[in-house]
Length: 118
Image (cartoon, rainbow, N blue to C red; front, side, top):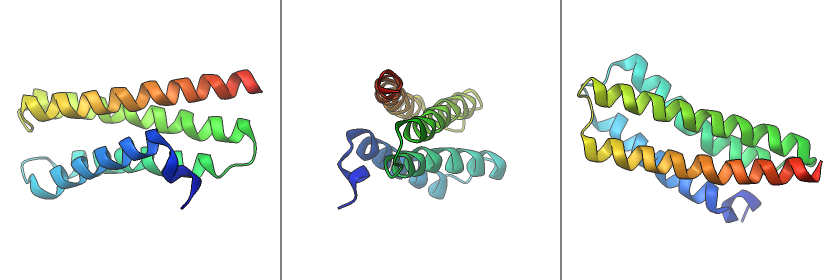
């Protein structure tokens, strides 16, 4: 097992990415450019958590976690836009926003802890 697979934030991001993946795979109303951006941003969260956990220095880890957190914010905005355009239902919007917010908060704590250790 890789070290990132033990991280709670990775587990949450992985599951949320599966929700996004299935949404994008099944929803034909969402424009291709929005699908592309949301898919890439959602995947970026998981990938940057994994890559950051592999770095040797705290500074490098912190940078990857900052990027992952930024991608979570990006996803939340896209979800807002999709909801405002009636592309996704309110229940899904709320589920996704809650998930991205939770991931963001966990990453924030991880980032702050790494900054204290620098």
